[in-house]
Length: 87
Image (cartoon, rainbow, N blue to C red; front, side, top):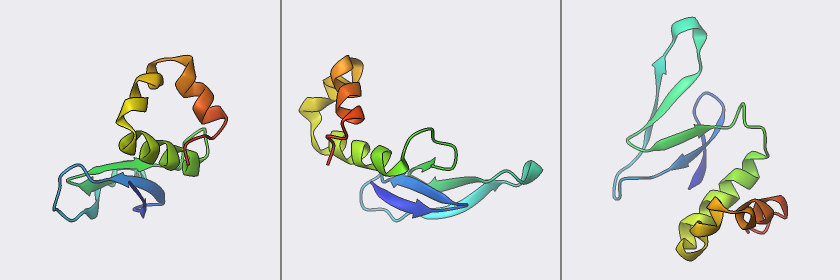
């Protein structure tokens, strides 16, 4: 997980090992800022209702702590995020 810049700030996740990512615009209809981090996942942070740094930290935490992923379906996961215990 890394911070990336496509058409603004974003979060990128490499989902295919041993590949490099390329950012390219996929739509210019109505001047939409849609970008694709091919072949990986890109999350635009422009419209997030939470701190993008918290989202990135949470993704990194749950990526490296597989045993803690079950708490995402419970109040415990929400409490962890509210208390910012993901770093």
